[in-house]
Length: 214
Image 1 (cartoon, helix red, strand yellow):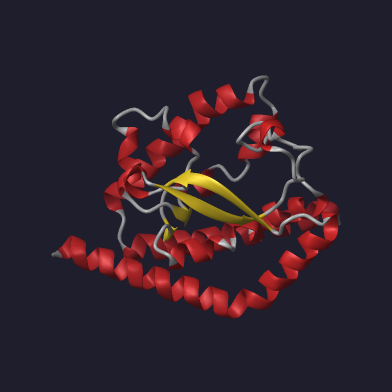
Image 2 (cartoon, one colour):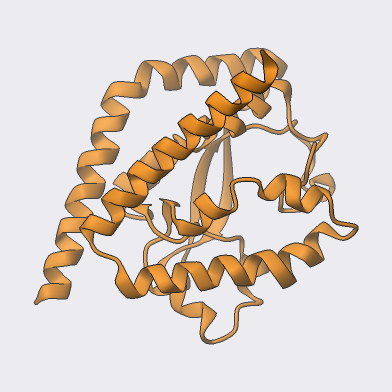
């Protein structure tokens, strides 16, 4: 009964936060979409297959931050260092996490939660062992403990001679372990704390960059 109540509270929190955020930010969403379209004439949205709860695939929505290329030339499914596929506007969107805002629609549709393990692409989920696959029992989220810990992931991978190997053998296992720990102790209070930590971390990172540039 407690688990059912926690699940209902979490879903209610998701709907309230995602619905409220969309109601407040829709003018900014329209402006960002228009800016992406004006930059290179391509689609404003990027849709990618990710693995959701219970291993079910879903279409994750993001603002497009990379130049449009044919699928066969898309390259790695991770972003590495100063990735030349990322557009000028895309760098700003990634830095501020504004590229993730369309996922609020994924939250409203029940495919994602505000807090939960970040959804992975099928290529990497296929490498999970039985213990790691337990993260698939939860709805994936916009933020999680691993997202906070690995905010500098692109730079970390950019310093590697083999970024994908480093991601698979070093980064991914650590992120999965952190999220498994989160799932053992999660509740509404934990989720609210992670949301606040995410907002403060993004604001702190932006202030730090502003200080470095001044």
